[in-house]
Amino acid sequence: MILLILISVLNVYSQDLSTQNMIPAVSKDLSSWLQKIPAGNEMLYGFQNRDEFSRARLGTPYPVFTLSEEFFTQPNPAFFLKSSTEWRIPVTVDQENRALVTIIQNNGEWKIVDIGASVLAREIGSYEKKVSGKQSGKLKIFRVYQIQSDFLFYDDPVSMPEKIYLIPLHSACLNLDGLNVKTDKQWTLSEVSGMIRESLSVNKMNR
Image 1 (spheres, rainbow, N blue to C red):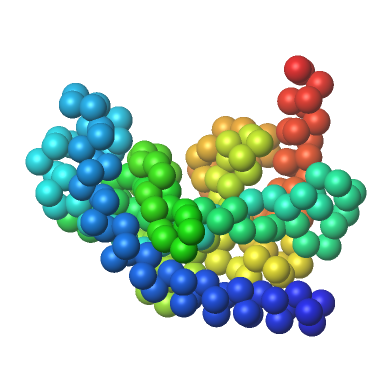
Image 2 (cartoon, rainbow, N blue to C red; image 1 turned 135 degrees about the vertical axis):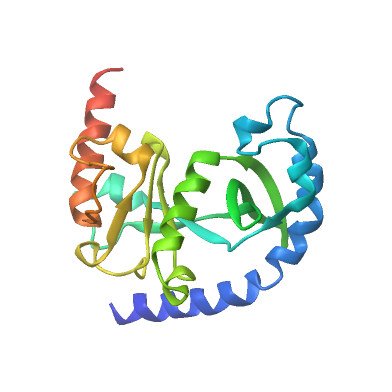
Protein backbone atom coordinates (compact mmCIF):
# COMPACT_ATOMS: atom_id res chain seq x y z
CA MET A 1 0.00 0.00 0.00
CA ILE A 2 2.78 2.43 0.89
CA LEU A 3 4.51 1.62 -2.40
CA LEU A 4 1.31 2.32 -4.35
CA ILE A 5 0.87 5.67 -2.60
CA LEU A 6 4.50 6.60 -3.34
CA ILE A 7 4.07 5.65 -7.00
CA SER A 8 0.89 7.73 -7.15
CA VAL A 9 2.62 10.79 -5.69
CA LEU A 10 5.55 10.46 -8.10
CA ASN A 11 3.18 10.00 -11.05
CA VAL A 12 1.21 13.12 -10.09
CA TYR A 13 4.43 15.15 -9.73
CA SER A 14 5.70 13.89 -13.08
CA GLN A 15 2.29 14.52 -14.63
CA ASP A 16 2.19 18.09 -13.36
CA LEU A 17 5.58 18.79 -14.93
CA SER A 18 4.72 17.16 -18.25
CA THR A 19 1.33 18.86 -18.59
CA GLN A 20 2.57 22.40 -17.99
CA ASN A 21 3.22 22.80 -21.72
CA MET A 22 0.11 20.92 -22.85
CA ILE A 23 -2.14 23.91 -23.56
CA PRO A 24 0.50 26.03 -25.35
CA ALA A 25 1.60 23.00 -27.36
CA VAL A 26 -1.84 22.09 -28.71
CA SER A 27 -3.45 25.55 -28.89
CA LYS A 28 -1.68 26.24 -32.16
CA ASP A 29 -3.37 23.18 -33.72
CA LEU A 30 -6.88 23.95 -32.50
CA SER A 31 -7.80 26.16 -35.45
CA SER A 32 -6.80 23.54 -38.02
CA TRP A 33 -8.86 20.89 -36.21
CA LEU A 34 -11.90 23.16 -36.11
CA GLN A 35 -11.57 23.74 -39.84
CA LYS A 36 -11.81 19.96 -40.36
CA ILE A 37 -15.44 20.09 -39.21
CA PRO A 38 -17.52 19.75 -42.42
CA ALA A 39 -19.52 22.83 -43.37
CA GLY A 40 -23.09 22.44 -42.19
CA ASN A 41 -22.13 20.01 -39.38
CA GLU A 42 -21.07 22.63 -36.85
CA MET A 43 -24.01 21.95 -34.51
CA LEU A 44 -23.12 18.24 -34.40
CA TYR A 45 -19.84 19.34 -32.81
CA GLY A 46 -21.49 21.75 -30.37
CA PHE A 47 -21.02 25.01 -32.30
CA GLN A 48 -23.74 27.34 -33.52
CA ASN A 49 -21.81 28.38 -36.63
CA ARG A 50 -18.29 28.70 -38.02
CA ASP A 51 -18.02 32.28 -36.79
CA GLU A 52 -17.61 30.85 -33.29
CA PHE A 53 -14.35 29.17 -34.27
CA SER A 54 -12.48 32.44 -33.99
CA ARG A 55 -13.56 32.73 -30.33
CA ALA A 56 -12.76 29.14 -29.42
CA ARG A 57 -10.31 28.57 -26.58
CA LEU A 58 -9.00 25.55 -24.68
CA GLY A 59 -10.14 25.02 -21.10
CA THR A 60 -8.87 22.88 -18.22
CA PRO A 61 -7.31 19.50 -19.17
CA TYR A 62 -8.89 16.39 -17.63
CA PRO A 63 -6.98 13.10 -17.33
CA VAL A 64 -8.86 10.01 -18.47
CA PHE A 65 -8.74 6.82 -16.40
CA THR A 66 -10.01 3.41 -17.35
CA LEU A 67 -10.14 -0.18 -16.11
CA SER A 68 -6.86 -1.99 -15.55
CA GLU A 69 -6.05 -5.48 -16.80
CA GLU A 70 -6.48 -6.77 -13.23
CA PHE A 71 -10.18 -5.95 -13.36
CA PHE A 72 -10.61 -8.51 -16.13
CA THR A 73 -8.15 -11.13 -14.88
CA GLN A 74 -8.79 -11.12 -11.12
CA PRO A 75 -12.14 -11.61 -9.34
CA ASN A 76 -11.59 -8.96 -6.64
CA PRO A 77 -8.51 -6.80 -7.31
CA ALA A 78 -7.66 -4.24 -4.64
CA PHE A 79 -7.14 -1.48 -7.20
CA PHE A 80 -8.29 -1.44 -10.80
CA LEU A 81 -8.07 2.08 -12.20
CA LYS A 82 -5.25 3.07 -14.53
CA SER A 83 -4.37 6.06 -16.68
CA SER A 84 -5.51 5.70 -20.28
CA THR A 85 -2.67 8.10 -21.31
CA GLU A 86 -5.36 10.27 -22.91
CA TRP A 87 -6.49 13.71 -21.79
CA ARG A 88 -9.64 15.60 -22.71
CA ILE A 89 -9.67 19.39 -22.98
CA PRO A 90 -12.90 21.37 -23.42
CA VAL A 91 -13.12 23.71 -26.38
CA THR A 92 -14.92 26.77 -25.03
CA VAL A 93 -16.68 29.68 -26.66
CA ASP A 94 -17.45 32.61 -24.36
CA GLN A 95 -16.58 30.35 -21.40
CA GLU A 96 -19.13 27.69 -22.42
CA ASN A 97 -18.00 24.14 -23.23
CA ARG A 98 -18.80 23.22 -26.83
CA ALA A 99 -16.67 20.16 -27.58
CA LEU A 100 -13.69 18.16 -26.33
CA VAL A 101 -10.34 17.54 -27.94
CA THR A 102 -8.53 14.31 -27.15
CA ILE A 103 -4.83 14.76 -26.37
CA ILE A 104 -2.01 12.22 -26.27
CA GLN A 105 1.72 12.55 -25.83
CA ASN A 106 3.75 11.12 -28.71
CA ASN A 107 7.54 11.11 -28.55
CA GLY A 108 7.40 13.75 -25.84
CA GLU A 109 5.07 16.04 -27.78
CA TRP A 110 1.41 16.75 -27.01
CA LYS A 111 -0.91 16.25 -29.99
CA ILE A 112 -4.62 16.56 -30.70
CA VAL A 113 -5.94 13.28 -32.12
CA ASP A 114 -9.70 13.86 -32.10
CA ILE A 115 -12.41 16.47 -31.60
CA GLY A 116 -16.09 16.03 -30.74
CA ALA A 117 -18.06 14.71 -27.74
CA SER A 118 -20.24 17.81 -27.46
CA VAL A 119 -22.67 16.12 -25.04
CA LEU A 120 -19.86 15.07 -22.70
CA ALA A 121 -18.36 18.56 -22.94
CA ARG A 122 -21.65 20.15 -21.84
CA GLU A 123 -22.03 17.67 -18.98
CA ILE A 124 -18.55 18.42 -17.70
CA GLY A 125 -19.22 22.15 -17.95
CA SER A 126 -22.43 21.74 -15.97
CA TYR A 127 -20.69 19.89 -13.13
CA GLU A 128 -17.81 22.34 -13.05
CA LYS A 129 -20.26 25.16 -12.36
CA LYS A 130 -21.58 23.32 -9.31
CA VAL A 131 -18.26 22.98 -7.52
CA SER A 132 -15.74 25.40 -6.08
CA GLY A 133 -12.67 26.47 -8.00
CA LYS A 134 -10.48 24.43 -5.66
CA GLN A 135 -12.35 21.23 -6.46
CA SER A 136 -12.68 21.86 -10.19
CA GLY A 137 -8.97 21.44 -10.80
CA LYS A 138 -9.15 17.89 -9.43
CA LEU A 139 -11.81 16.61 -11.81
CA LYS A 140 -11.02 13.39 -13.67
CA ILE A 141 -12.86 11.28 -16.23
CA PHE A 142 -13.41 7.55 -15.78
CA ARG A 143 -14.12 5.94 -19.15
CA VAL A 144 -15.28 2.33 -19.55
CA TYR A 145 -14.38 1.83 -23.20
CA GLN A 146 -15.95 -1.64 -23.36
CA ILE A 147 -19.44 -0.22 -22.80
CA GLN A 148 -18.80 3.39 -23.87
CA SER A 149 -19.74 4.83 -20.49
CA ASP A 150 -18.33 7.91 -18.76
CA PHE A 151 -18.13 9.05 -15.14
CA LEU A 152 -16.52 11.97 -13.34
CA PHE A 153 -14.62 11.72 -10.07
CA TYR A 154 -12.41 13.82 -7.79
CA ASP A 155 -10.73 11.19 -5.63
CA ASP A 156 -7.22 9.78 -5.86
CA PRO A 157 -7.36 6.98 -8.49
CA VAL A 158 -5.24 4.67 -6.29
CA SER A 159 -7.68 4.90 -3.40
CA MET A 160 -9.61 1.79 -2.40
CA PRO A 161 -12.63 1.27 -4.71
CA GLU A 162 -15.06 1.93 -1.87
CA LYS A 163 -13.38 5.33 -1.32
CA ILE A 164 -13.72 6.54 -4.91
CA TYR A 165 -17.06 8.23 -5.61
CA LEU A 166 -18.25 8.40 -9.21
CA ILE A 167 -20.66 10.84 -10.83
CA PRO A 168 -22.44 8.91 -13.61
CA LEU A 169 -22.93 10.79 -16.87
CA HIS A 170 -25.61 10.27 -19.48
CA SER A 171 -23.72 7.57 -21.37
CA ALA A 172 -23.24 5.51 -18.20
CA CYS A 173 -26.92 5.79 -17.26
CA LEU A 174 -27.90 4.57 -20.72
CA ASN A 175 -25.62 1.54 -20.58
CA LEU A 176 -25.74 0.44 -16.94
CA ASP A 177 -28.95 -0.68 -15.28
CA GLY A 178 -29.44 0.82 -11.83
CA LEU A 179 -28.00 4.25 -12.55
CA ASN A 180 -30.26 7.27 -12.76
CA VAL A 181 -29.04 10.47 -14.37
CA LYS A 182 -31.98 12.41 -12.89
CA THR A 183 -30.57 12.18 -9.37
CA ASP A 184 -27.44 13.63 -7.79
CA LYS A 185 -26.50 10.30 -6.21
CA GLN A 186 -22.84 9.40 -6.38
CA TRP A 187 -21.82 5.76 -6.54
CA THR A 188 -18.66 4.17 -5.22
CA LEU A 189 -16.35 2.47 -7.68
CA SER A 190 -17.08 -0.79 -5.83
CA GLU A 191 -20.81 -0.43 -6.52
CA VAL A 192 -20.32 0.50 -10.16
CA SER A 193 -17.80 -2.29 -10.77
CA GLY A 194 -20.51 -4.85 -10.08
CA MET A 195 -22.79 -3.18 -12.64
CA ILE A 196 -19.95 -3.12 -15.18
CA ARG A 197 -19.22 -6.82 -14.70
CA GLU A 198 -22.90 -7.67 -15.11
CA SER A 199 -23.17 -5.56 -18.28
CA LEU A 200 -20.05 -7.15 -19.76
CA SER A 201 -21.41 -10.63 -18.99
CA VAL A 202 -24.75 -9.84 -20.64
CA ASN A 203 -23.02 -8.39 -23.71
CA LYS A 204 -20.83 -11.48 -23.98
CA MET A 205 -23.84 -13.81 -23.77
CA ASN A 206 -25.68 -11.87 -26.48
CA ARG A 207 -22.87 -12.16 -29.01
